[in-house]
Amino acid sequence: MNAVIDFNPLNTVQFEQVRAHYEPEFGITWLFMQPSPRPCFNQICMSELLMNQTQIEASHANPLHRPQQPTNYLVLASDVDGIFNLGGDLATFKEAIENKERDKLLAYAHLCIDNLWTFYNMQAPITTISLVKGQAMGGGFEAALSAHVLIAEKGALMGLPEVLFNLFPGMGAMSFLLRRIGLSAAEKMIRSGKVYTGAELYDMGVVDVLAEDGQGEKALHDWVRKTHKSLNSFQAIQRAKQRVNPLTKQELLDITEIWVDAALRLTERNLKVMERLVRAQNSKVGDQDEAVRAAG
Image (cartoon, rainbow, N blue to C red; front, side, top):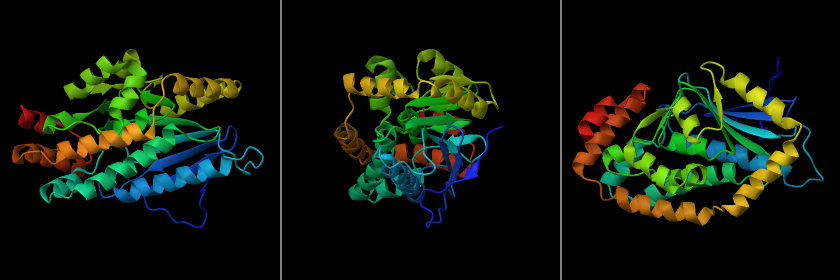
């Protein structure tokens, strides 16, 4: 049994939409998303995630000064039953697009990139892990892809629905998928708008560790236990992979500019499809059937 300790890297801060837990045996810090009112990335949730990540990173940056509760593994997970994250705050997108608020869209996109880049490029000996149970759509899937290790249950559902309303996922999907499965397969996935199961994505090489349904935490702990004895080697290999196939933050930021410009060209019909997905986010089920019919 793994002991879990309430852990807050910013002890004086009360977080609204992120809950942190710490497991001392292997140094696992969990960041559980609990966004409100919709299970998607709003600015509060993203700001709190970034604050936690950067504080944990900073506290481990100097190898001569390890914190009393060292983090070897940083896990992104969800407190919302059946949902990892449904992605971007589409209601905010729709309003900003209708009002032609380019700066607002770009600021949101840059906050997304700040989060994903920190998780991907952690400047400390910390392995980042995403644990996907339930649905991870759009930006939720992009966040999961930014981890060093993506663990998913077989029946988890992941997809990039942006093509349904004539857009594309602009917060890292192309960059992260390219480095996992190659450019052609990444483009095919993005253009399809298809929702995949965890099992399908494991077979494609997108998911690193596949868990039985309801056994995601067990699979994570099993992987950590197996990896921990050679963690230095694992982390060095991750660094080497990033060196031979480098990703820069500027690449991610440049793509957000393309995304914003494309978003501002959406038509009224496109925005109606987006509105259907907003209703899906509000209902917390992420059901895209209506949106698929509207796009067709």
